[in-house]
Length: 248
Image: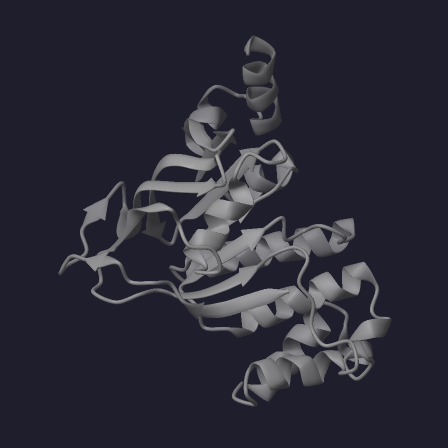
């Protein structure tokens, strides 16, 4: 399901600044997460720019989901700082695995209740049409297939007016046509100067929408690379990732 809320505003500085044609939105400084005696994340340092799509790539258990959940305020870091440059916390909308809406309500009712009946009904209907879910909008959520449930997650997320989207493997369960539609919508959000952090195991999906990629291994960022640099090398993201893995 999706979550929406305010990221904890740990520290702010008064004015934004420009860098690499982007406007600085927030920065993670030395973020760590320890559960028991296990380091889930270690010294994560990341900047996210306005209008940037930042991809997370790595094996299962590498810390991608935990990093996204820390930004969504559903998990607290053990230590570290989140810095904002605009003097206020970001409004965040997110998609994570293993969440669900209420099974006894329809898709439309679930969104209405979650939004406290404060939303643009015309835009909601447009999104139902856009994702070919309009005829099922009044069907109970419990009857939805996994792909339909994921479409509802996406509809809810796009209906929000967030400036930061946190997407944890958002294309899971989607057919090829819907994946392509969703990736085009991500590009549209980027054009609206909204920032997106997205994780996926499908390197080709990340390659289509991302400006930069972070590769995580065992809770640490082991590689930072821009898609522009990969294009200059005439190398796909998947080939780059596998080449690194073969050298390890």
